Each structure stands twice: as C-alpha cells, then as structure tokens.
Image (tube, rainbow, N blue to C red; front, top):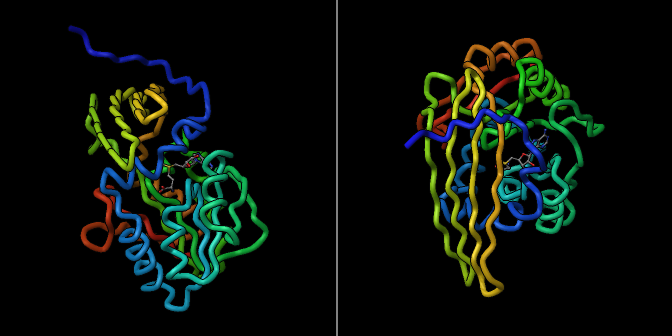
Length: 252
Ligand SMILES: C[S@@+](CC[C@H](N)C(=O)[O-])C[C@H]1O[C@@H](n2cnc3c(N)ncnc32)[C@H](O)[C@@H]1O
C-alpha cells in the first residue's frame, strides 16, 4: 500500500464555512478543549505584564468560545473574524460584543486594546514569513506601549510529525460528529486533509476540508515580534495550556 502524499496545496473554499462552523463548538469541547481554563491562563499571562489590563481583542476569534470566558477577566472585549459563518455564531453567542469582519494579515478596527490575542494556532495559516510579520505587526498596532500581544503558535518544524493521523468521535445530544485527519509535510508547509461525518436524526452527512499551514520556526516568530516592536517571551509548561507554547510580546 502506498501512502497518501498529495501535494495539491490549493484550498478551494472557506474551510470554516457552514458545515464546520455548525459543529465546531461540539467537536472541540467534546475533544476536551477547555476554553475556560485557556481563558484564565491567558488572562494571567497578560496581567502579569500589565496588571491593569481591562480590554482585549481576540483575533480570528472563531465562534467566540474564548471570548465567552475572557469577558469574565476583561470588561471590554471584541473579536475579529474572517469567516462569515463563524462570525455569525460569535455574534449570536455574545450580543453586545463587537465581532469585526477582517483579515488578520492586515486589519484596523479603529482603536487600541490593552491586550490582543490570536489563539489555537491560527497564525499557522499565514503562508509566508512576510504574512507572519504583517499579522503580528497589525496586532501590535492595536495595543499601546506596554500593551500585550499573545500568539499561540503552530508546531515548530522540528516537532511536527509527518503523516500524523488525528481522530475524534464526539456525541452531544442526538448528534454525533466524527473527524479524522491526515497531515503531509512538504518542506516548511503542511497539507492537512480532514474528513467529517455528522449523524443526527436528519441523516448522515460527510464533508472534506483541506487546509495548508506553515511550520514557522521559533526564530521566525521571535523575529516577527521584534520587527513589530515587541519584546517577546516564549512561555511553556504549566503557565500555558498548549504543548505548542505561547509567544507573549510587550510593545516597546
Ligand atoms: C483554528 S480556528 C480558531 C478559532 C478560535 N480562535 C478558537 O480558538 O476556537 C481558526 C479561525 O481563524 C479564522 N481565520 C483563518 N484565517 C483568518 C484570517 N486570515 N483572518 C482572520 N481570521 C482567520 C477561521 O475562520 C477560524 O474561525
């Protein structure tokens, strides 16, 4: 048997369209992602650097699951999200919290926040070092001097497992969601193909998403923060929730 090593790096549609957005919260909560714990740890790393921080922008906020809990820690919150379907869920979930339509590679929401975050490795969707730099620069422009920019990276190249298979089976109420994924590395780029099966009383649906992510190095992240005007720490261990660590920048 030969391995599936497709090198087609074309993404044909918004991966976070109707089908995935409808099951996103069920899938990730059911896989054990603890949005409340992540929000509490995020608030701690921010407030260690800026004890008075009270406003926060979540870039690529998805369905606003983090913002739901971050609102307990910061009185003034907002999100930015590219996918109309994810944005619609976020807006319905948190009426009164502005969820801006925007692309993290270059955005301007017209004000600053004490802190800006970009979570769950969304930064890995940046396809070049230039895009990595422009997204971190855009985040940094949204904080004042002393403001905090937190980015949860994707894997560094040396830690990525080529051919990795991920799986999840999640049942909630009368709906079961199954996801299997297979990732193939081509130099510094990963093509991840995920198949979803959703079964509920309406029937069974199947869809496939292909996404392309970049394995930026630790040095590339650090250099992007430095060019944007931030002093940066790389936080690991029990101060963060992710095996992938957290970059925490403070604007100089
Ligand atoms: C992995 S999900 C993370 C969502 C959320 N931060 C979370 O932790 O649940 C990635 C999100 O980033 C959004 N996204 C992808 N590329 C983006 C871009 N260039 N600008 C803004 N949002 C983007 C997707 O639509 C999706 O909602």
